Structure formats: structure tokens, C-alpha cells
Length: 258
DNA sequence: ATGACGGTGTGGCACCGA
Image (tube, rainbow, N blue to C red):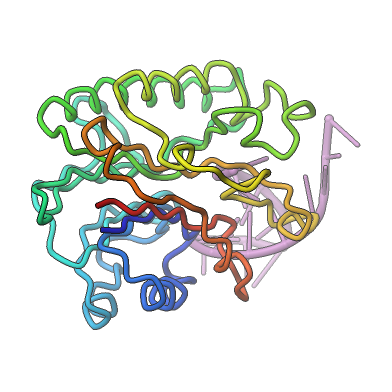
């Protein structure tokens, strides 16, 4: 079984890239972030023609998340229960697999703009709420995957310039502590279960030839629960779509499970 | 300190992202 996460930065602009990618990478489920469209404009028909179902949680202009899957999902939850939020950032659902139900939590984590800002405070509140809720979800669903655009570079090696960018957004002690708190729930960063190329990133700035110079961050992650961890056989970033015409600034991350 | 790219909106630029 293969799962993936991809921030596509407007599904309107990049639907064809998603379809092309799915044709080349027929994953069982794909978590999308930054749809930037409302549910009424979600391309269910085009995905269905490609052999995929979808559950979506859209919003105009900003945010928006979806789970695209080979088989229909159940028990869809939108945003974090108990956390008031005007922004569409989380969609969770259960995928039936031969090994049993698999709970998928797909998130577009808050960016936070700048430490000390109101948006940064929102990010920390949001991370708190997500942590509390994922802890509850894990009790109900031992087979759980938390994936998405975390907007956190967990370690210095996940940044092209950990010294110059020290204590800036994605790199702060607070954000990294929240990432660690997720791991402390029993989740494992699937990417780090395997040897990876140095300077492996999942996002590159559009500006200043960021991708060509590999000036990026690894901020898109797939975390697996304790019982899933032994079943993970591979995890990697697929840089290929970042070379497309009109690419998203993020690349997909893919995990393979037995 | 700022802007560099790119998407979106009802715009002639501003706002946001990371």
C-alpha cells in the first residue's frame, strides 16, 4: 500500500499535474493541501475518471484539504473537533485495507508568518489542539497516519540554512517542540526510518532559483503510528513534479507500507 | 530591511504563502 501527501498550491491550476502524477504513481490514497477552491468546484468527476474517489474540505482562496483514494473512505472529520477554526485545514477519514481500517489525518498546518506575530500565536494554539485530538484519535484508531504540510522543519538537517534561518518561521524551538510532541504520542517520521540523500527537502521557494539551487526545507511529513511502523518499507520525496511547467512549490512525499 | 515568485480577488495593486 502506498500513501502520499502533496501541497499543490491551487487545485484549479494543477489538477492536470495531480492526474498525471496519479497515473504515474497509482497510490492508494493522496492527501492534498492548499486546494484554494470551494467544495462546489472540487473536480470529483475528473478524479473519478482516473479511478479515484475523494473527500474534500474546501475554502475560497486559501487553505482547503482533501483525501483522494482508490476506494471510498468513511468517518470523515473536517477540522479539529472542539477547536473553532474559520480555516479549512484538516480532513480525516478511514480507509479500508486488507490489513484492516487505516485512519488518515491530512493537515495543512498553519504557517505562522513570524515568531511573535498573531499568526504565530494561532499556529501554536492550532498545534496544541491538533496534538490533543490526534492523541484521542490514536486511542480509537491504532493504525493511524498523520500527513500533510506541517510547516515545520523538525531538525537542522531539514533546512538548507539552519544557521541563517535559526529561530525564524519553521525553525523555532516552539514549533520543533510541537513536532516532537507528536512523536511522543508514538508517531514516527517515516522519512527518517530510511537512509536519505543529504539536503532532502520537500519545498523550495519559487524565488531566487530556490529549486535549482536546492535551497529548500523539509516541511511535508508522513508520521505513522507504532503498530504501522514495522510495516513501512519505503519513504521518499518525489522531486519530479517540482520540475514541471508551473509547478507547485512543494513536492509529494510518498510512503510504502506492507 | 526589502524583494525576489506565484495564486487569488474585483484589481489597476494588495495580501498571503514559506
